[in-house]
Length: 292
Ligand code: C2E
Ligand code: MG
Ligand code: MG
Ligand code: MG
Image (cartoon, rainbow, N blue to C red):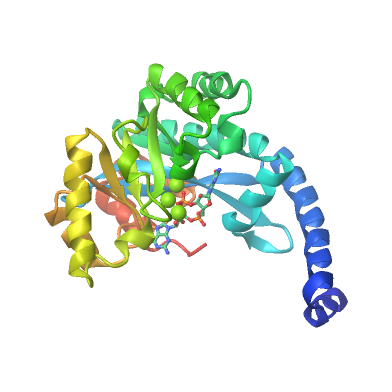
């Protein structure tokens, strides 16, 4: 391994690409094995109301602790899963794990929460996707009307009728749709009125400037009003500072998510808090969570 690391460091250009390909082959094989062994888990990050800090929901985020490499970032293994077709298995594993955990939490707390789950285009348009999703809901007991699937806006640019059809099939049966990473790239502003969206997740990139740029703050306020008028609920992502949280609360943003309110955690740690868990105890737990 050390020899290989040295070898890798000396390579450049085309040779480097070949080696990256080899590494992808290794990692793909390991990912397939990890999925079969149940080693890819759903962690949960709280989605909270900025007004009172109460937990309204959780976003499921895939976590993979590789036996020798340590934690592998989702931005590394999700694209790999998409390109190799493992995304279907990964998606089902994460959905099932997250629904099971969220159901245990709501039963322990005697309170309802949203659960949001990321879905890639390739998953959504696979034949039988909706049936598989409802099968997992039945098995885990998690209610369809508390589930939100997160898709990126590029998926909804109108070119994939299959994607739009799949989302409509989910919505007819109570599942909600969120547009993830809104405000990056060329946002589908002109199509907000026709998109099958119940939630709009404002990307961290959009949120980052709100307390330093008055023009960005004006855009935020206008976007919140527009979404409200369209009956779409906004979730601000990547909220890292108290100032950002205060501004979002002041502007009436219904939901926020970010390191200022809590990091993703292993759901087992939430359940360990038992029935006495509260918004405050969950905040303390998630604020102290290790960074992935
Ligand atoms: P995303 O869906 O936009 O998820 C938000 C990402 O921002 C997560 O990164 C989360 O840990 C991180 N985050 C949350 N709050 C903050 C903050 O205040 N500051 C900063 N800097 N980051 C914050 P993560 O878990 O590394 O996931 C990265 C991306 O990988 C996700 O972006 C999503 O696109 C994808 N992903 C993760 N899990 C799944 C999955 O189960 N299925 C699919 N298809 N994609 C997934
Ligand atoms: Mg997301
Ligand atoms: Mg996002
Ligand atoms: Mg993102």
